[in-house]
Amino acid sequence: MSKKIDNLASESLNLIKSFENDLLFKLEEGTTYSDWKKGFALSVHFDGKENYAIGYGLDLYVNNWTTIKGWIDKVNDVVTNDFNYNAKKTFKVLKNENGSGTEEEDSSLSFEDLVTDYKIEVKQLSKEEKKVLIWLQKTLKSLRVSNKSFSFPNEFEINEKLYNNLDQNTATYNKIRKIYYNIIRHLITFKLPDTDYADKLFKEIAESKYDSAKTAIDRSYGDYFSKLSKYQKGAVFSMTYNAGANGLFKDGYTSPKKIREYVKNKDSEVDSDKEKAIKARTRAWYELRYNSCKEAWNRESTRRGLARRRYNEGDLFGLYEDNITSKEAKWILEAFEDKAVKKTDKKNNNKEIKSIYEIAKYFEANIVAIPNEKNVLDEKIKGIEDIKKDLENKSKETDSKPVEEIKAEAKEKGRFLDNVSEEFLKEYNQKYGLVLDKEKPIYNSITKIQEHNDVLIFPLMDRLVVSMEKEKEKARDEDKKNAIHQLINRCKETLEEVINKLGGYKQIAYKKDNNKDLTNLDRKRRLIANFKPKQFNCPDTKKSHEFFESFMTEEDKKKEEAKKESEEKKQREEERKQREAEEEKKRKMYAQESEKKKEVEREKAKKREGWIIVHENSEVKYMNRKEYYGV
Image (tube, rainbow, N blue to C red):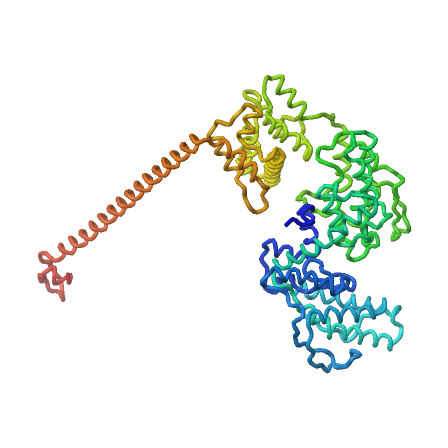
């Protein structure tokens, strides 16, 4: 059964997991940790402010218990190793109700009891008292991360500006002490059964939150969210998962408004509408990447982690497509310089910065620098300066329709471009952009093929996938290897989409449409082998594999069987020769050992025969050799 979250890019779900609980995500991905660290990754943990969470951001304070229970129940129904939230355990609690004293007594409490009690107790705290609680929880978390023990302090480091009399300090101290001893220290001992449970729980929560992302954009204005790409949906979803539908996309905010404007105009053929779409997308990208992290602008302690997340979400949403035209690049550059976009830095004497470009540059220089790492799309995170340079280079390029030019070139040379190749090139250009440069692998392959043959999908995939796999194996530079790997995966993904769009295309339909066939058996073998579906983060190639397999004739199969039989016969012959060689080697070793033994016996025999003159005590006498040598 399909789920709503299937409409999101998988990278966006991984992004959420990584930022909500990176240790657990790495554990799920296969990183080996100590038993203690595994337990910590799966356990209840401090999640900022007064919040505690479990798994991938299941907030135990913000969510009501009915909602939490509903998610856990759904997962418990489909796993064997469930999470028993109402099982009672015996814990020690302070006997004195006001939190003073050291005398303790036993209390029977469940996970549900502790979550409920924590919420009740914390809601009764004043704003100032919560600050003390948060100080305690941060200290506790920092020690837990390092696997160090925590002792409740004798007295708090209380800011005297907030607590200016001893009685108030003592009352606050006892309140927090009671919450820690009776609830927190027991609550953090609870953990999910395993990473599979954590993953299922996350997906259950994500599924229930999908509509929040849709609401954040659509509201009552119409259907806009569904028309975004899976990556753009994923970026919006990640932000609403983190802050809710009204947190960063409240009705009236700029970002949802600009996203709707982008969707409304993005498919128009009218230049003025296209310009609106490009500039609206640029503004939305800016809002997501630079203007949706008030913690960073306020210089809060959590700013770096949140800003890293916003950089990733901005990149996931994307500023432009790979096949951007020079005209579109110019529109983005114009949007970058729009002085109507303003930002005031209240933490720097209310300094006002104008334009997307200047605000982004200021943010990166003064608030949170671009992290030196790859984003969730496995691409290096770029700063605004590099982004602007890329756009300036794009704006200078000559716009063209590359697939039409390729068709025209093929026709001029008397070559035929089959329908699968044409659809492949169109789809690839739409997704990643085609550049008519002979240094680029796709155009280089096409020009090489059409020197002597028609441009058919078979030699094209032979060059772009089969040959490139060999190039990847030979590559020593890691960046080059990654670039080749990316090209191969893009080609496979694109062809798979084309074959699907053509209705699961096979040999009979292909031959009818193109009056062409694949007859080269070696090429058939290579393509079938390279497009065989694989697991572990490999693109789906099921339909394209079936497409290439459909060109195998009965005669081909007989040849394959004959070849297999010949290879098996050759292997048996090689094994026979190897056995004979080993037997001959053993025979020679045996003969050598036998000769050595005979030589020893001959030496002994020499010593046993005849007499020997022996000088003993100034006397000379004859002795039998056997007697003298004792042999």
